[in-house]
Length: 119
Image 1: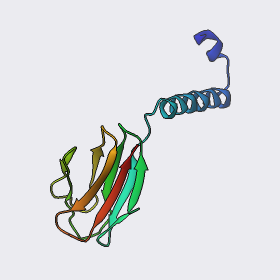
Image 2: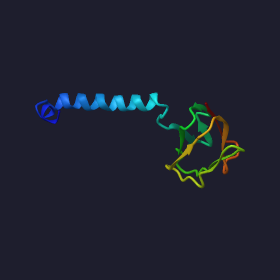
Image 3: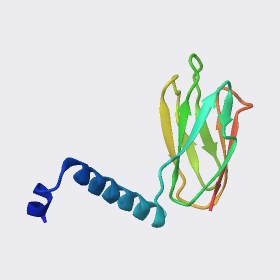
Image 4: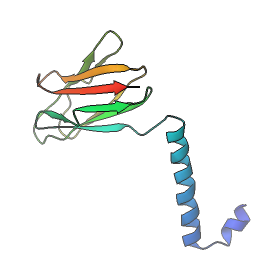
């Protein structure tokens, strides 16, 4: 196989690499392992304010505020999480290993709320 690849042009090799990457990505999504769902924290609001993910997936909470710190947390009987202080430009991942409905709040800005529905 390697000798066959040596005779291929760079464009053909690039197409093969892209196709292989797509198959890996599709395989990951099909097996239930997806990329983290991105959620922005800007202007004292989670955006989007509600999301649905599959059990085992994670949410990447990004502080998109230029000068505000955030502090995402979850306190429920099934899951506890606390990001600690999130400076502007930073992000943190929250894993959701079990199904349920979870409220992600900000300890600094009490009106901020993200609802995560985990299937």
